[in-house]
Amino acid sequence: MKVSVIIPVYNVEKYVKECVESVMNQTLKDIEIICIHDAGTDGSWDIVKKLQKEDDRIILLENEENKGLATTRNVGMDKAVGKYIYFLDSDDMIRKDALEILCKRADEENLDVQIFGADFIYENKNLELKFKTNPRIFKGTYEDVIDGKSLFVKWMDIWDWMPSQPRFFYKRQFLTDNNLRYKNQMLHEDEIFTFDVLQVAQRIRVTQDELFIRRFRESSIMTGTPTIKNVEGCIKIIDRAISAVSNEEASEDYNKAVKFYVYKIFKDATKKYRLAKKKLDENNAKIILSEDIKNNESRLAIFHLIESFGLWEEV
Image 1 (tube, helix red, strand yellow):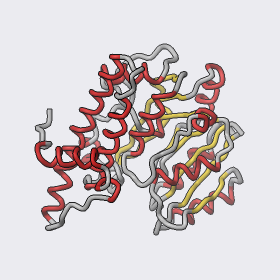
Image 2: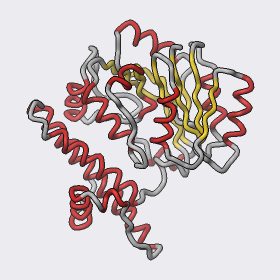
Image 3: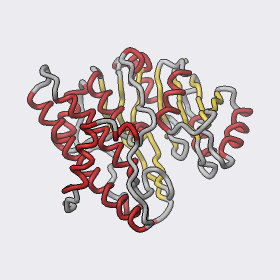
Image 4: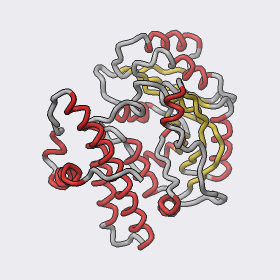
């Protein structure tokens, strides 16, 4: 088996058929399509079941209760048998020749990871204006295969950071050998996973190929109003990144890059906090912290730091 495509499915009945069919119609045929139902309440799963009757490469898995994107991706990884793994969100698509291009390059260059560009679809003009600064391709040039830490330093130097997982293509053995898993029950799990990938990857190819088709739609995790859970996710990212700086073997450039990354995430956390707190105040609701935040002194300290002086002006 060449590629395992993992698609978590949750309340996307308007989009899931187009998503799964974009994989079914790939020019590369030696694939498995692992669809995991995350206990949604709409007609998404009925649509996927009908598609499975047309294509026996589709494998159906179901969570007994809603687990979230991170846990569901891990379920797919546990089932996957392909040489390579690709994570696709169920409201997005991929270009028809994407998997063939990625496999060919990965085989030829013995790559752990590939990272690539995207094409964008907007449901309405407001979303296009709101997310017009999201990069389709990278600002930098990446002519050579590069290791993860060197790539991280370069990304921080020109702020080319790209954690969106559907823009990554992995060798499965690389993920399993390094025990790389998504952090369960948190938002912004892409950020920590990408950070961890770059700590250990030795052979990464970055290209401008627009192989992923990203859909910006209303009421998605990306476009909705941030909540305190979003802020907590940022705090966990900061906590993880700070732990990397304590590595005595890391270079000065790498430690400087990590500190800059922490600054950027902290700034994003303050913005999310401001929006979340405004929404809570409008509803006369209180901030409720999750148990793992309340039980972690360093995370709680960061949270209080945001609360006390984190309302920075945007630049």
